[in-house]
Length: 396
Image 1 (cartoon, rainbow, N blue to C red):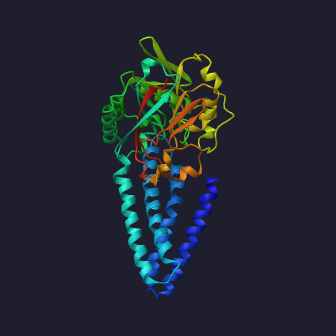
Image 2: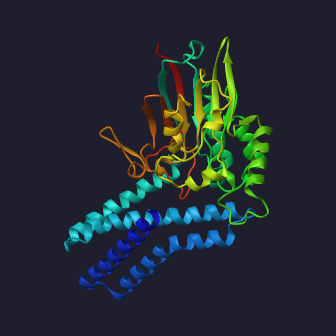
Image 3: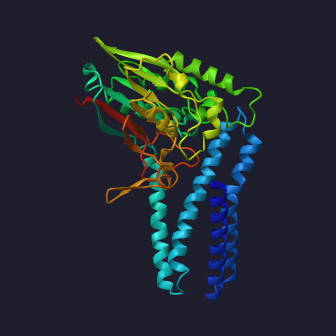
């Protein structure tokens, strides 16, 4: 579906560019202006075509991270230019009135300022979103228990990973959370993104009961063209070793118990197996993945918090009684989310049933974190990087 939408968008953009050129001819624009416009349009439209080429040629563990950043810079420029262009066309092309051209130019420049703000400010404007979630079966000792939940850091695509992670760790420390849970996609391409300096910053992200994490699709090494020198299973193994060295516990289809006096809750982590990789860009709920094996040794009577990178697994986890609270990431709100009159606006809403925030069903609840980092392009349009501070409440 996505490729058809991309092709359709490219065709529409080409038609609009042609109409804009004809409009310049109508105004008897000087030849050098028309040439500049043609060169500008050609260069702008070639950018997204060059990105897959760069990634194909250079996408290996030695320079994959550098090329990922270069590709993201190119896509960021393309998106900014395209937004400005489309806004100008909306005002300019329906009418030959030059007033609309000038007005469209002003609005187009304003959109460029807004996009620049999303790149240079919003992208690292970490916010703590405090959420209180009540359960009838929550043990009394865990009434008021505070979970700091983060997801999708994407270290390899951070512009300045060390300083950004230091800022993130300071914000999380300020929550005074009982436990920190991480929902996957720590790296972007490869375990080697976890340099000693990065690990030193991650070391300080911890809760009183510890830090527990799962893998996301990017953590598996599946996006590297060269997977011979570091196969996916080895990439996951080395990533796990690095996390263990800083005290993070990686849950791979496994469960830990957190105790308070005579009460306890279970935290289960859904591993990102090779079988799950086929769903990494799936928009529908996942129905043909066996989750029962993950909970075979888990006590049915214990309150369960499950970390699943993919929120599309929630219906299976919840409706079968495995998870009371599922925590997920993955979607990032597609790095575009604005609240308008109480409604959340995002392209993600057109593709996913659940994509951001809190959802409830009869047997359980889901919270989808908007993520911390970026992937694809260096901007967060309204979708500020999120640290979710969840307070569990006993609703007896």
